[in-house]
Image (cartoon, rainbow, N blue to C red; front, side):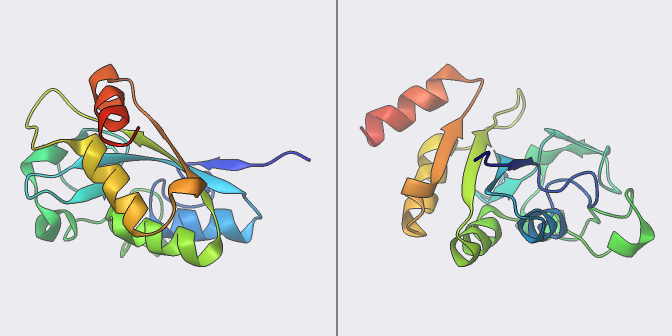
Length: 156
């Protein structure tokens, strides 16, 4: 039996990497969700694909220049449809709570842009996943080898 992993949630029907897209993917019967995570300047782990804002938000600039409060003030869905104007960039803990509640598998791609960088995003991400008890329901991926090496070093 095939298991469907929803890329950035149900991104054809809802604005990508939003809770609306994740909820819809689960409603459609997805086994799990593939998503991306960035570390904001205040240490918040934000669920977002691009390191630059603008494609999916009503703001421009590097995601690393913002903190939780500011990123939550931007619409992450108005570009998709006026019906999703109130959708915001989720923080990782929002997705983890949802995944735990709905028993969803996660593929979390850990990102790090070329701009601002704060701390060890890989270790922070895995630590949060473990805090939610989802380590057996999650895989981590990254194009940054040092991030994956750091995870392996801290979590052999």
